[in-house]
Image (cartoon, rainbow, N blue to C red; front, side):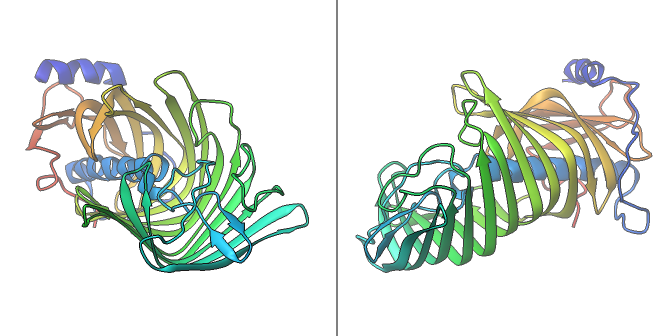
Length: 353
């Protein structure tokens, strides 16, 4: 593993030093020195997991495209992909109700719905979805009521006092919850991903399930997404503010993103391979320059291979190499591991929060 770490250091550049800007200052930092490097590794992994949840996890999508007929509103399940354009009726066939309307006004379509423990079996996902709360949508097109939304239509979604539960054979497997969440989306449709285009997200989102427990707060978070190839290679450029409370990793931090690039490739076995590059200003550490030496292979939110370069401001570039049974960190770029931890290192690494 030491030889792999040395090769990885050469890949990210052993002479690479931190040269970061940002607003993080000594008066706000909690971690310094080697603890800052450990915290940067933990926070970066948590941040990547949160971004993957927002972009790729079907539970993270907002209420997708909606339709209505007469006074009986139908809406897509909130568990659909963030930019999926298929309309899925919720008839509350397993209990509950939906009240709302679909109307056209000034060249736009407005869909307003209030769900009360509305329960429906989603055949595509193979789960029973129960939703409660307010879901509103605006589409920059007409002719949507009672029909699927055409591709390439700009949209705005809003959830309020919303909770959604997924069950398989009666067992709760996923929870999505939000007091207030808005998303605007301007699709480009040029690549292989439903996320192609520009999305703005603002508000809060709770995501819980086996192996993950995220509480996220977004402040004008912007995703600019493009994609190509097969399997699909998706690149997101991200700006804005994101608060991450990762209960699994025990990490809690505010992150300011300015042009962070996250490239995701889904392999044939379904494992996500992720590269993240750019500067992130963590409230607990300050600015951290992040470079990917080898793509991270994520099993859930846990990297099982790959190399991540991190350089907190004022500290030499360090490298963290991930393996199926643990991780190694070289603090000073000499090619020798200075720290090791088992598994994801959740219990061993210094962490924000």
